[in-house]
Image (cartoon, rainbow, N blue to C red; front, side):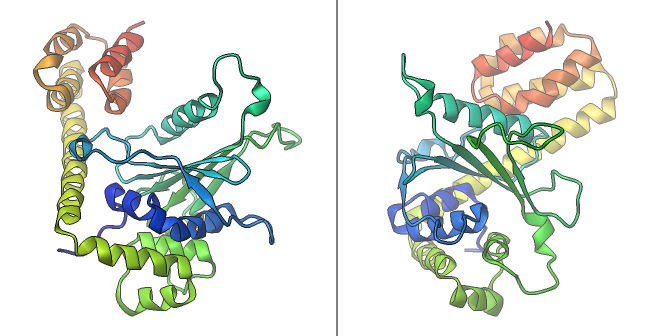
Length: 304
């Protein structure tokens, strides 16, 4: 096997979303959340279901991790390697689903618990070249007063830590270097002083020796490579054409690759759209569609 890719979301889920990987997960969460001394996480409950291998070639499948802390807070962690230019809205959408999904019919809002989203990004979303960790809450614009602590969103930008010219200065920097796939003596030195990373590396080695796991890992790598190629091709075609036809072709190409023959009717609907601003709205959202119904809703909303 070639050099391992630790941002492969199947491998990530196998390590951090497993019972044997809980120590690694807790270590990573403490590094990101930075709780006050004495309030560090010591246990979490994994809420994920088992993976179905048939979804590994589905480029839209979310192989994220969902856990609950001892205080009832929900924590969702997702790796995003491909920049679909919607990570801000995507994050809020899935955060909202987790937050309102805590309540059943007729239950009181008092039972809602803090919901934390952590995005590990393989691309740069924010402009500050020296800042790799961004944390967001809901605050009043002028005073900075916190509305409540229920929303907490983290973005970790791996590219900004990749070129680190010094040794890591804290646990989070060590974890981000780990996700940047460092190897050899540098990785060994970090692991010696970081039990969580040492645990992750142990599980990683067991994973690599399992032929079935390696095959599923490669399937997921292929899905991501195909997605990157398709997105790049579609956008390049749209830019090169510089007109509605190019945008429509790019959207239809995505629909055809993603949903096959079942999307023919929707493709015909796209071909009837001639306004560039409408097609631009569609092309900026269409890559978030997890189903044909989602794609149709995106197109319908753009034309309203």
